[in-house]
Amino acid sequence: MPLNKTTLINAVAETAEMKKVDAEKAIKATIDTITKELGEHGSVTLVGFGTFKVSHRQARKGRSPKTGAEITIPAKIVPKFHPGKALKDLVSAHKDNKKKTAKKK
View 1 (cartoon, rainbow, N blue to C red):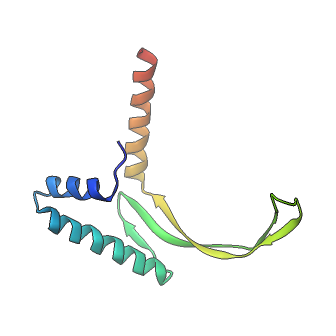
View 2 (view 1 turned 90 degrees about the vertical axis):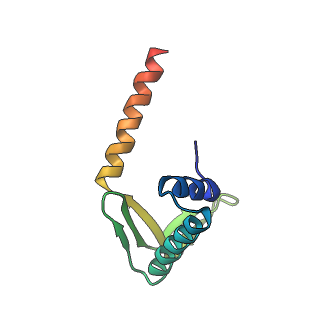
View 3 (view 1 turned 135 degrees about the vertical axis):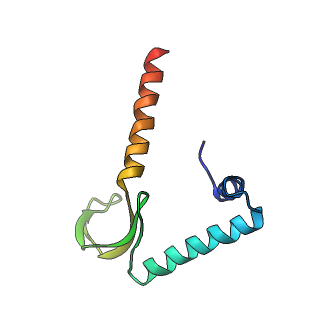
């Protein structure tokens, strides 16, 4: 089940045994801090979870889908997330379990 901000707040409040208002403040502060650091072209590493960082994309050539003419796509700075080993392993384990379950049906 995908989580949106509201369900994430509810899950954090329940898991941490805290009020929803406090969980919302904690999540907002976390997001704001990560956003601020990336805005300053920094990075945020959460060991076992992953790293949020800024990546510089070079200008490149492309094609206009409308006309087919060659265009220059400008350089830009974009946020990226690189999952940590523990997160990759967890996701991979769930993926393998889903495949096994699907084959049994």
